Image (tube, rainbow, N blue to C red; front, top):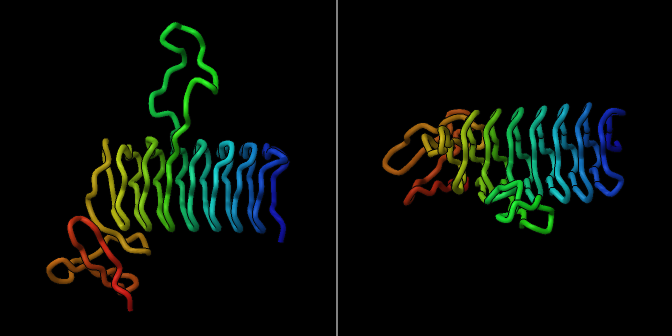
Amino acid sequence: MSARVQPSADVDPTAELGEGTSVWHLAQVREGARLGRGCVIGRGAYIGTGVRLGDNVKVQNYALVYEPAELADGVFIGPAAVLTNDEYPRSVAPDGRLKSAEDWHAVGVTIKEGAAVGARAVCVAPVTIGRWATVAAGAVVTRDVPDFALVAGVPARRIKWVGRAGVPLQPDGPGRWRCPVTGTSYVENEDTLTEVES
């Protein structure tokens, strides 16, 4: 099944869309962007120049994913979430001259496998969101997020651990956690959570 692009969407001819990917109304996919298989780009979403999306990534309505973001397989970006790319934003240079693309260096947000970013959250580049982590709705992420962490607030801080199902983990002994949905066990060591191989 080939990619499906709604007539009102703006997809640059140099963008690559994987098999089964859908780009909905008023979305924009810029030059050189590469989207994997089975991705869903919601209404009014923006995918910047050269952005890389893995397979089965969902970017919900009006989310903004600025270059050079890299999203791994199974990432979820909630409605109106923003992944920034300008570490020191200014419209003009110190001399008052309007800045151009040559006057700044884009830095990106990296999101690892299965992670989710909630509605209206902002990830301030450069940051990395770890595997299967969850960023709560409205959070502002200013530093890296560990694998399996649930972060919330402004600035975002870890408040719980979550498993692959996205549900908060339950204590299962000293330094141990268990997912109430999948039954998977995890071990915590120095603010790092590791999945126990079955």
